[in-house]
Length: 251
Image (cartoon, helix red, strand yellow):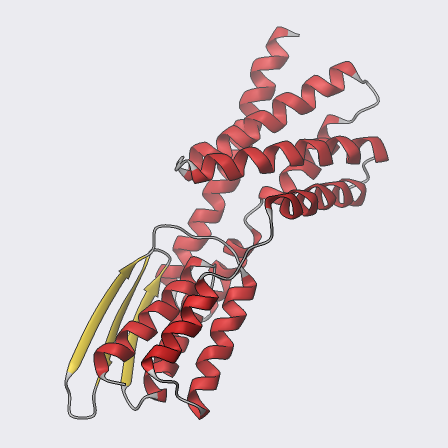
């Protein structure tokens, strides 16, 4: 495989990792590993929004590649498959066509259906409400709110709404619906319902990866991920506070 093809394969693998929530150090190590598998030296800088790669031949010839990452999600299955792909290349370097086919299969691997993800979100809200001393009624209400919130988030994110507004609206809906249901059914504890309903929206992976990147010495990427996680939490909190402060004035 020539140097340009290696750069293309390494960039594609790094893009899949970064799009699916991998840490910066994992992206950089994977790209270096792929380059080394074909006898080249690889240098990479990765942050939460892009990858910068240089592939260098033994005689000093260099090819550089830059890839901007606009859309990010969390998919541990794809991360695990790219990890296996890069490890296997060390002992069994694939041809350019074979490597492209493997990466295409990973990129196009099917996701869980929206129905399955909504069911998982509702069960998560149900269990966590009970975990935080909520009643079964609180847990049921949290699960129902989570179904609606997850569906709305999925549709609005595909429509291209920016992240802060997306989570602000989610918090607004959760706060308004929880307060309204507590007024209709006094047995419902609004605090427990809100706690359970926001669990599925908390950016746990981004927060954890930010800390891991900082511990590995990648302060830029780690700080960016931590900032993203904090921004999401603040947006939800402001949304809930807005709903409660406005509605409580009218009661």
